[in-house]
Amino acid sequence: MDPRDYPLDPFWMPFTANRHFKKYPRILVSAHDMHFVGEDGRKVLDGTSGLWCTNAGHCRSKITEAIREQAGELDYGPIFQMGHPGPFKVAERLKRMLPGDLDYTFFTNSGSESVDTALKIALAYHRARGDASRRYLIGRERGYHGANFGGISVGGIPGNRKTFGNLLTNVDHLQHTHNLEQNSFSRGQPAWGAHLADELETRIIALHDASNIAAVIVEPLAGSTGVLVPPKGYLERLRAICDKHGILLIFDEVITGFGRLGAPFATDLFGVVPDMICLAKGLTNGSVPMGAVVARQGIYEVLMSAAPDSAIELFHGYTYSGHPLASAAALASLDVFEEEGLFARARDLAPYFENAVHALRELPHVADVRNLGMVAGIELEAMPGKPGARGFEVFLKCFEKGVLIRTTGDTIALSPPLIISKAQIDELVGTVADVLRQADRV
Ligand SMILES: Cc1ncc(COP(=O)(O)O)c(C=O)c1O
Image 1 (tube, rainbow, N blue to C red):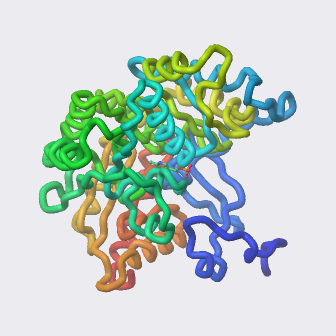
Image 2 (cartoon, protein in one colour; image 1 turned 90 degrees about the horizontal axis):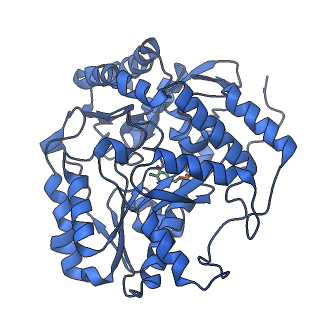
C-alpha cells in the first residue's frame, strides 16, 4: 500500500537525481537523537548529521521547546531599522566563542548567503578604506561555497559552475591540496602540501597584483568535494601571505564550525584566525535555517566610520536575517553544545572514529581513507567510465541496510552527530564495510 497521501512529482528537489528519486523514493518522516525514521517505519542511523547540520543529534527537546516558545511569543520581527532580542543575544554568544576580535555578526539564512555576504563585505571594506581597486576574489579548486552566484564563482566545482555562464568576474582560484600520491591514508593533517599556499604569491598575486585583490576564501577543511584535510602548515602560510599583502582571509566554516573537528571551530584547531568566518548549519543544529558572517573588529569599524552618522553603512541584508525562531534555536543549540561538552566529546571520540574508518583500508576499491575530528572521507576507485556510480551504489546499499551516509562523487563522507556512541560508530563503519565487501555487486 502506498504510505503517502501526497504526490512526489511537483517538488523539484535540490542537488538530487529527481527522476531516479521519484522512482525509488527515500522519505524520512521523523528523527530522534542518532536516528531518522523512514516512511516505512524503519530506523536509519544518521552517519552524516543530516547534511553536516545536526551536531547534537535530532529533535533535541531543549531546542524544539525553545522554537515552540518563541513561535508563540514573537513569530517575526522586522530587522531593517528595527530589532528584537534574539540576534543581539546570538551575536554576543558568537563573540564570546570565537577567538581574537572576531566580534561582529551579520546574520543570513544559509551558508550560501553567508558566503555571498562575506564577499560583499570584503569589497565594501576595501572601498570604505579608499582602496576600491581591490576587487579580485580568490577561491580554490574543489571548494564548495554554496549555490549562489558569488559562492559558485569562488567555488571550484565544475559541475556547479559550467551551466550558469554569467559568474562573477575578477575571480581566480588556487589549486586544491588533494594529492593521493603524497598523502594517501593520512591520519589527521597530511604532512605534504604546505607549499601549495605559496601559489597565492607566486602565481595569483604575480598575475593580478596584490593591490587588486580583496580577499581569499577557503574552507579550512573542504567537506563537500570529498573531505580534503589541509596539509600541516598550509593555512598558516595562507594567513601570512594575506597579511603581507593586505588581503582579507575568509574561512568558510559552514561545516567545520560547532565542534565538527573536535574543537569549537577550525580556527581554534589550526590556530589561524581569519578576518571573517562564514557559519550556518550547526549554528541552529540544523533546526531552523540560519547563517552568519562574523567579522573582525577592524572591518566593522572601517565600515561604520566611512558612512555619515545615522546613514545605513552597508546596503545588504535579508528579510529573515536574525529571525526570531532561528535565534531561539541558535541560543538553545549553543546551550546544548556547552552543557553537554559536545566539542570536547568530539575531540575525545575522534581517535576511536579514526581507527574505525582506517580499518576500511584493505577493502575492495578503497583508494584512500582520510579523517580529522569527526569527519572522514573514504575515497573509492571510480567504475571505469562511470565516475560517481560506485559512490551512489554504496550510498543506496547502506541506506537499504539502515545507515545514512553521504557520497560526493566516489568519496564517502562520514560526519555523524557528535553524540554518536562507540557502538554506533562500529555500526556505521561496519555497514560501509559490509557493503564494500560485496564489491562485485557495487
Ligand atoms: C563549506 C560550505 N559552504 C557553504 C555551504 C552552503 O550552505 P547552504 O546549503 O546552507 O547554502 C555549504 C553546504 O554544504 C558548505 O559545505
